[in-house]
Amino acid sequence: MSIQLTTAEQLARCRADFRMGVGVVLCDGASQWIVASAETLSAPRFDGLRALGDLEIAITNWRAVTLSTWANDGDIARIFVPNDQGLDWVRSMADPSDDLRRPMLGPFQHVYDGDAQAHRLALSICKSAHLLPAAVVVRVTGQEACGLHSVDLQTIKEADAVLGAQLAHISTARVPLKYSKDARVHVFRPQDGGEEHYAIEIGNPSRAEPVLSRLHSACFTGDLIGSLKCDCGPQLDAALKNIAEDGAGVLLYMNQEGRGIGLANKMRAYALQDQGFDTVEANHRLGFEDDERNFLLGAEILRLMGFDAVRLMTNNPAKVDSMNTAGIAVSERVPLKAGHNHLNADYLATKAAKSGHLL
Ligand SMILES: Nc1nc2c(ncn2[C@@H]2O[C@H](COP(=O)(O)OP(=O)(O)OP(=O)(O)O)[C@@H](O)[C@H]2O)c(=O)[nH]1
Ligand SMILES: [Zn+2]
Image (cartoon, rainbow, N blue to C red; front, side):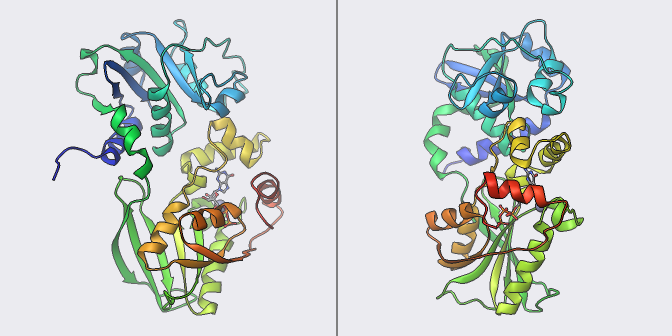
C-alpha cells in the first residue's frame, strides 16, 4: 500500500493548478521546467517566471499553422517569448479571438535546444483542464521551484498507457422519464479526478444480446437551452424515445462538452464561427484537434454494466470504431437523424464533409 501519488492523481493536481494560474514543476533527472497555462497566468506570476530565465511558449501544430508558422517539434511548436513582449503577446499567441485584431505576432524565434517533453505534457494538461492549449515554459535550475507541485516526467511516460479509462460506479437511482417510467440513472466517476459520466438505463436490457445504445456527448447549448446551432437536443430526445419504444436500452451521457474542449472553448469556437470559420476550422484555430473526445470511456461504462455488444445509435463512424476497439462489438449502427434546421445545415454539412459523418 503506497501513500505516494499515482500518475493520475499527480496530473489531476496539475490540472487544478493550471486552472488557478499556478505553475507546475516538471523534472527529468537534472532538468527542470516550470510550466503554466498561458490563458490563466496572472501578470505578477508572468513577471515572476520571466525573472527566472528565457520564457518559451508551447503551442500545438494547429495553432502554429494559424499563426502562419510551423510546428518545429512535430505536433507542437516551441517559440521564445521576445524580451520586449509581455503577457498581452502571450495571450494573443493562445487566443484566436485576437487574430484579426493582431494579425502580425511574428517573426517567431523557434526553440530547438533540448527536447520538448515538458512542453508536450504542459499542452496536454491545458487540454485536460479545458483551457486553451498554450503553455508558458521556463527552464530552471533548482530552488526557484520551491513550493510548486512537482512531477517526474519519467513516471508520467511509463504510466501514460493506463490513463483515462478507469471508472467506478458511484450511485444509482430510479428516475421516471417522459418516455418511460422504468428508468434508472447510474453515475460513474473516473479515478483521475475528471468529469463524471452518466448512464440512463431504460427497462431491463438483456446482457446476453446487443443492447440498443446511444453514446451522447454533453451539449449545454443543445441539450438544455434549445440551441438551433446543432442537432444535439433533438438527438438526445429521439434517442431516449427510440430506446423506450424498443423496450430497453442505455443512453450514455458523457460530460465531454464541445467535443471534449469544454464549454468556454466551445463558445470561443462559436465566436470564430460568427467570423466565418466552420466548426472544424474553429477548433483548429484554437489549437485543438477537430474532436478531442475519448469514446473509450463510454465503452468502459457499458462493460461495467455487464454489456459486451451494442446496437449503436449514431451517424459518427469514429464512435463505432472506438466501441469495437474497446471490445464492445457493434452488431448494428442505427442511424439517428433528428433536429435538422436551416441554422444547423452548414454545421451538419461540415461534419459530413470533414469528419466523416453519415447522414
Ligand atoms: N467544438 C465544438 N463542439 C461542438 C460544436 N457544436 C456542437 N458541439 C459539440 O459536439 C458534440 C456533439 O456530440 P454528439 O451528439 O455525440 O455528436 P456526433 O459526434 O456528431 O455523433 P452522432 O450524433 O452520434 O452522430 C457535443 O459535445 C457538442 O457540445 C462546435 O461547433 N464546436
Ligand atoms: Zn450540440
